[in-house]
Image (cartoon, rainbow, N blue to C red; front, side, top):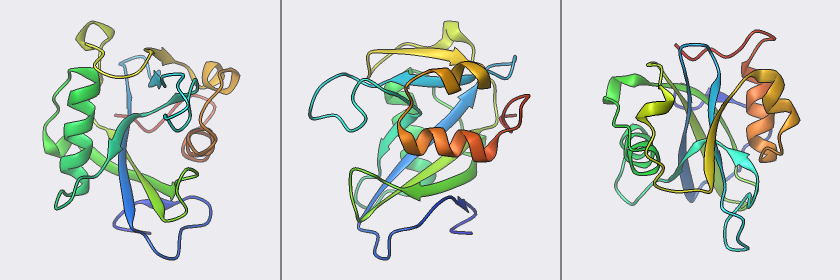
Length: 153
């Protein structure tokens, strides 16, 4: 395990870039996903993913997850609301690693003020499998979930 994160798939030998992503959900156990902007400069363009983004220089993983989640959803969670879940290689960068946290507090749709992306949705596991997800996100969802949902709260 890397820093408390469950490794999923092959990990890069050298990590020069990191991202902190958040698997959040609502009280019904649905996962909160972001529809990525459909632009050529956006990795995973037009697909569904978790909220989150790049870790800035000198920033810790939890701080990055907290900052990115707040910037993109308008929801500010305390630092202790992020539990390490999984990590996987970033497809868009050979030297990149995605760190996924599970939010330990349910998020309600009315709390969301979308700050980035083309949209958001709360989806069941079955719905997620029918949507075009970023490949690494699909793999993380499949490997960290059960038929009834995710280890969100």
